[in-house]
Image (cartoon, rainbow, N blue to C red; front, top):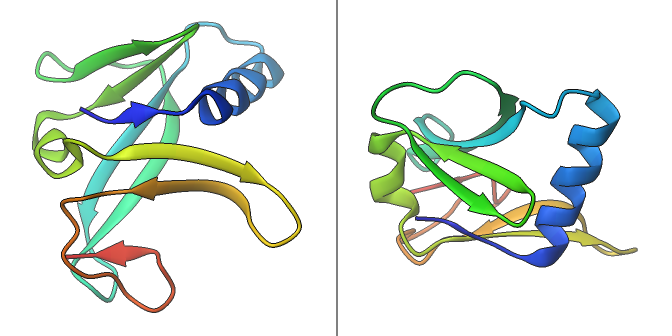
Length: 106
């Protein structure tokens, strides 16, 4: 499944705290689309399907559907907050190539 850095888990926890709903989890998915074939999708979710994989990372839960899990196996979710880069990023060893904007992969 996907690994989550301490920085990413901390930011997710902060965002969930701002939402004021402790039942929320971070859903990470891979969807068809983007200029290279697949794109990442991340959002807060409180719904879980029977075939979802739920993994705890500290005080947060990450949900991945079974189809996305195959494409995210071995990937790492990170968060950076700097002058050059800010935001979440996914380092995915399964991605053979990515587009110029960095938002999609194949």
